Amino acid sequence: FFFSILFYFQFSQMGAYIRFCSSQLTAAALLQKLVEIKPGFDDFLRQCQSHPQVKGMPLSFFLLKPVKRVMDYPLLVEKLLKHTTNGHPLHLLAIVFEIIQRIMEQVNEGTRHKENTERLEWLQIHVDRNSELTLDEKLTFNSTTNLMGPRKFLHHGLLKKAKSSKELVAFLFNDFLLLTYPNFSVAPQFSFDKHHELKLKLYKKLYY
Image 1 (cartoon, rainbow, N blue to C red):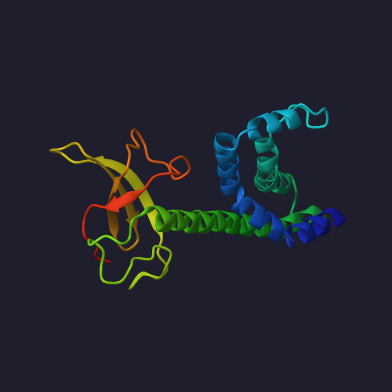
Image 2 (image 1 turned 90 degrees about the horizontal axis):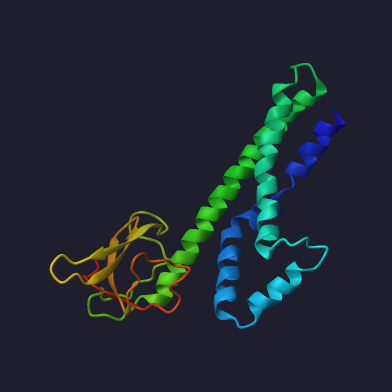
């Protein structure tokens, strides 16, 4: 009984975990970026990794560990419930299991929202919005659409024109499709995380 109560109060106060897990992808991308562009950063990480208390584990392991811990809890509680009868005090864990499921949904939703916001902000910086191909008003990526609510990024891909084989980078949103010319080749695949210096110009006039 007390074990169930302890679980209940622990999982009802998991707001910090939700924020941390939602930002984990961003943290991993930032870590990789620093390794690539900041001189001496990788050597510093290796030096920290050699400390006896770290046991040879990289920083990425410690960033991911809380996320994996949260993801393991539903499996643990589910196994306990499978071996617990209805009248047993531990069956109160069924309430905890529902809380965990809601937490996981919030983590997933938070991750999607944060990733969407960051990609829209990336486009706000890297796309030339002063082109004659834009509408009279300047396009703001991270804004509300005319009919679809907040703008959401859905997909991106690399295209080539049939005749000239010129490279295009396409971005699909919930209210329009954006086709752009990159200022250098991003083949074989475009990446938000890797192409920090990329500049994009519009290929077709925008209607949204």
